[in-house]
Length: 227
Length: 389
Image (cartoon, rainbow over all chains, first blue to last red; front, side):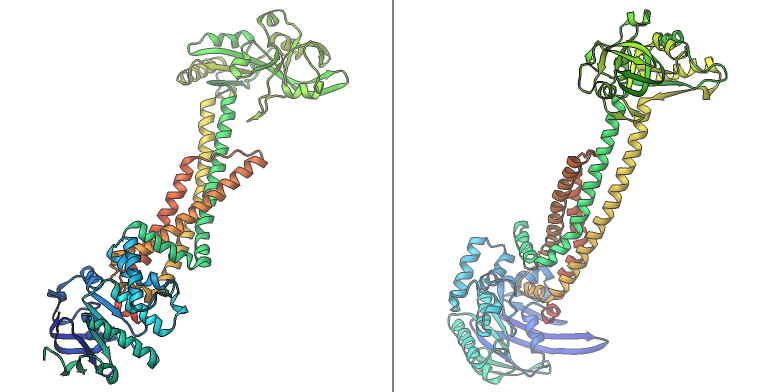
């Protein structure tokens, strides 16, 4: 499903060179639930950006679903993000002007799906996360937990091969956080591949496999089928 | 993402920020409004002046004699000889002077013109009532008069003037006809005059000379040839270029339409500048909007929006703002032009070209000034955009 080899990423900020990743090799099998855990500044966000096709590595190779992504153009990367990856962010990142339904529908617009099918699928995704009664609410009218569930519905709607969750519980109270984690576990149980990025060991423990990252290198890998 | 979808997104964005969208639009509204109103009024002025000049007579050439020394005019026969020249359809020599006309206890000071039966056709006058002068009136020096509409109004105030006797500088004349009202044109009223036979006028004014000759050419093409011939004849007669002047109606028309055309262009240009300012306003707001929506752009990029999608979204947004503004400006301009021409004498021509230019130009302004901000949005780095607050 995911295979990265010798991934490095070097940033140059104000003349200072920062090595965010110093050679990461990682393989994630289909239907795995992996947590990438590490302290802030460890390079886990950079890894997530590269795996999420938001960024390209300085050196190294990345295959997603059998395709070498590190060679793709900006437009092709956008296409991969749209079709293969569903994002869940710490700060939800919903579009504030739009209703829950319109937010969930958005990825399908960029895919060119017709209006009727879009709305059907968006409704189904919102029902899946238990928000059938909140479809026309704006993000500001929803609680944090509900907003994060809208975001998960949005990640699901395009039927991606990988759901990438970056600190999905980081902005939530513990009850909502538990809800979101159990939703992710359910999705995993239904056969989705999920990659979770967190700095909280308790959250990471709920995943099937934990990968530890420190100073741009993987330093531990527990519970996985591949290891 | 197709155009329809992009428009739906753009309208959503415009609607969610109504006040700002409206203020942005206002620049274009005022610009298009100014262009439409000023150009329509300018074109109205042009067409009105053109009409007036044409109304003086078709293919009209006017010869004015100023004279040189003792030779201050043409004789009647000399003037009539001009009719025989090639390209000339008709000639109407005019002897004129200021007179006082009386009827009963009413009197008016007006222009007297002594002329021949061809005068109405040469000068494009119609007869409202009665008849015009006949050749027999000229031969017999009949004391008959044809009145202009203004004179009729002043002297007769609604009663029938035909057959009545008026006094022109004390001499009795019978009214045989009334000219149809023609309105004012360059050179004053066309309706404030009294016309009598040229032979009678020469007696009355104690002046035998013809100082004005109206000449009608056979066709617009013949005008230049006739003018050249006339100038040659006059040069031979007076041996002085200042002794006569030949006015060619077509030339006047050219000059007039050049002047009004320049004026229209100038007004349109000034109005165009305000449209440009409106466009800069759009660019400014779009840039602010891109900055404000950086995070939104980052989110949509993460969701798989291509550069092209984001470019489209912003470009369509600015084009929609600007064309909506253009449309509103057009309606306002149309309203103003209609109101002005209703309540004042000004004519306004609301031409389809103006409409097309206004709409296309406002669309162009939107696209042109939207390109830079849209491009800026499309090229944002998704990671940095997502990090923005």
